[in-house]
Length: 596
Picture 1: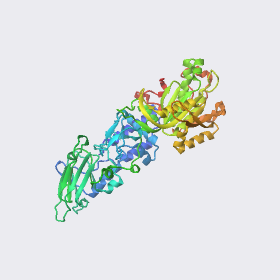
Picture 2: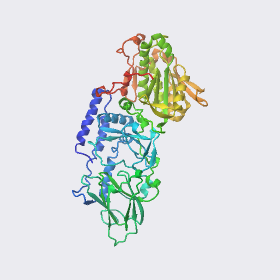
Picture 3: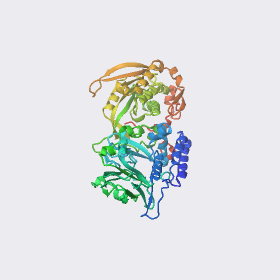
Picture 4: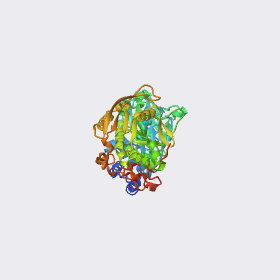
């Protein structure tokens, strides 16, 4: 049901989003995306199914009514709820752009962000919550009643609900997508909207009239299931209908059909003497309802949705790596530890960096001046990592830990950082540029709440840290696990080592402390030429491909290392990390550094 105020409210909130983009941040407001959303909303006018003032009366509906209503539901499906991956695919947008718009939409109240485990059986939302830390370790699907263990962030979908003043949908639960096998055993599929009076709607089968939506049901036992209204019951047809049989009226109040599996409730069994039935349905729960009658076969056929038939979704793993999410919500969206159940990520790429000879740097400059240089190094790393889709997890002294969803992104981020690190100036103690050593490894990792952030625990993190320690100055070691995980990662490595800034290092067998067996890694090291000032001349107009912005880069003199904070160099800024300060959030995460 669309409310009359919807278009006005949508316009008001979209204007507020545009104001944030133009006045409070340098974030580009994507008007094309919101115009696309509005084009879908134009289909969300009240369906006009017709309600009667008498709550005991019913309006007869036929096959055309049923088809039109389902078409209406399908037309607003992309917004009920908003699935970022689906919107990106159908609208031709980059998924990161869609997410950025929706994150800011959440900020102004146009949409609400929801986290929902994906049901192992039906593929729908098991339940939903507004906080990542409130996702339970175990949950029963409200649609198909399948038990779920929630232990992987890849299986938590992130979706968005439009403000009810924009799109108001009367539904108890999210719809399950029926599989092709399930639809093959379906006899009746007709939707009924909720209404304000509680009056009913009539569907007929086997009557031979124009209003008939299906032939008469054959004798047997049928399953009647509606995941949206949370009903699950049986219908028994006792015998074959005769031509002379009068139509049997089956009065159905949706509230009497709701099935509560948690209380051990038995499914109701409705009976009809023959298959010529008039279903008088009263949606008294104020929820959308589907008259879905199927053959009573096994649950797998009826409820299970194969992987290849499931809808795309945006996982929590992807969302926590988005720079806008981290800028706006990172402090509040932290996982929680459930009893004996920990959230993991099946495949995460972890990057560890460390400044070479940092002890000598502090000894020669003193803590304050040394940290000024370290801070500039943080700016370069944070910028390169976030621009390439990474997430800065934490700093440990002058070391940085970051995570990525792909090896390709991690490799591009590290190579970019190793080139740009020369723009922050030379070390006064030895007149060399600041050098870092880097280690990259990938695998499964457990996500744990530590010091208010989503941190990683496990052997993948251990190996990544050990690999970094094995690298030499201005060298990045990347394990074969990363390069073998995808063809894109191998292409990225070959692209980096084919250029003039880096030279490839051979495969090395590493014997790492606390790790059984040997770890094979290869790397790339900055060439001697890349350490000279002339090497960064090609970066004087560095282009951020993802944000489509250019940055002017100038080199910093050694004297600037002891200047004031106002004398900042033109290092590429992390625009995606900036928060709208006028909305009560810090201007940038780069303003605060805490050593752990």
